[in-house]
Picture 1: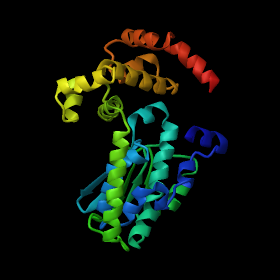
Picture 2 (picture 1 turned 90 degrees about the vertical axis):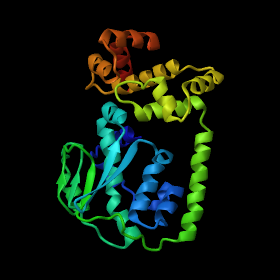
Picture 3 (picture 1 turned 180 degrees about the horizontal axis):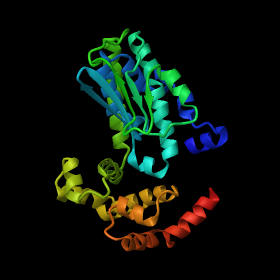
Length: 288
């Protein structure tokens, strides 16, 4: 979606232009957020249920020396495969932050500092205008820092009854979402969450899912799938995403995915696609 938006608008700050301050746009989560007791409670709801929105952005909160730091981390796979669209998602999420805070609290917040991972865009003045404070680009993290501890700030018009009702509905929706996934799909999601240059050992994932290795393997066997095949599917999926970014060559992708040697990576890729990485990239980038 972001690729097509950017191609048609030629606007490198489109994510910021499209930022939405309407909490109803995120459905049931928005109603829970609107009725949370405090800003920190609302943030926790957003973080806990981010997979029901997209799963591609993680929300962090730190209170350091009286300052509150809110971070917006884009999934590293997306960042590697298509950084220019990942920047738009961060712009979009952060652009809505101040207006949402105003809606929830009735207060106007002026950030102490706003930081973006993205390089400085041509229209950087727009960022200073919207955030009404100093903006830094090419930063280590996407982060908004406020010069106060915001943990206990109350949300106006919060309704305890509505909060309880919507929270129960949200929990039911999250449970239904998990139930609708096969066990193999749940395993794949956990692996993706824990992926750090290599697929974790089966024992680690089984432990993460509160299961013994034997029970874990039996559940996969019941769905006629193996942990190894799930691992291969994930590596293939990540590889194809990274190959769409001309910045990464085969050796770099091999390193990112944890292969001991580039030759082993190329052999695996040949097995998946019956092509070399160079052949696949040439064909697919030409089609795009």
